Length: 445
Ligand SMILES: [Zn+2]
Image (cartoon, rainbow, N blue to C red):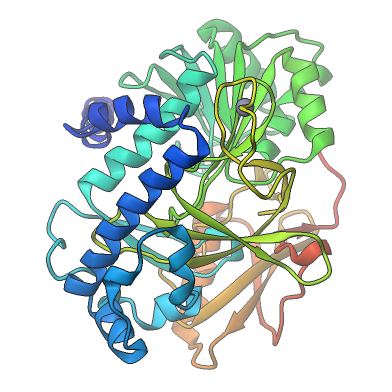
């Protein structure tokens, strides 16, 4: 297995860092210090190009422009996007094939299937260029935080070793990224000494993780009274609570650089070296849709680079509190004029506890590929037992149910007891936030 995995790592890197990667990266180094009027000019140029492309090659938009009797040339900049209706998840699901460009779809396209933040299965196609662009943006975030290719350890919820394996190694080495990929699933009270020993031996300089797994790891370091300092920690995938941030930063004596993105790739927010969250204005056009009576805004994004399945004015259903909802007059100490976000209320985090005592934080993969599911939520009261609440479209079948159970066992533990319960509604948490996992148990049991 070792050989093929290493080959895969290098191929993946080659694919992500393809011929256009460096070009995008060089451009992004400049655009991050653009003044507001330069950003507007840049976004306008890109909008004109992609809107015209949608009109010429994407059936869904061809029909839309026709029905609105709208001339695509009248869309000249971000403000003009308001001439188009908002696009939501359900519309994307219902018009999936018609949202794919007739001109650009080919074998090099990558199908990102993920459920996103609301547990709703969705598929989003991107081409080689869009993938290179995406990685250039993320790469810039890392580089700005001083990671020039340092040794890293990651806990990102991927399946690294089989869930049924109960002995080390619970990790594998990715030579292309100089990355020790550790299994999030096996981090438990029983195994934590193995994890700590391996980290001390590997001496990583940076940590990549979801906040919940970073939190669990930090707790185990403290519990075992082991000191370790990273140069930086990069979190993503879940919202980062201030208390969790403070705890992790205190244990590992370094700064966290948090990142927000989503499967649909319509908006990105990154934290700079001065602790500010910035909307990445050269990544996409982000509109802030005021949410009633909350002072919050929903992020609505228009892609500038995905020509295979372009999403215009896509509603993320993720909410933010803004520090300034307009472009600032003064640059941030980091040098950019990107709008500042106070707080991201995207996704809550929690974890499931398996019979083996493992913490499963990332459940987004579970509903992927299961038909007739609109939203899912996990509810746990007892160790090793979980109820999966499912909001269906009314056509949910026995085989959909079996598939959900199968996926849950695969991503948690083969010994997990799973109950699937159809519900009429999945209530939102405070501020309309969607909650993936509700766990009524004490942590670190
Ligand atoms: Zn800044």
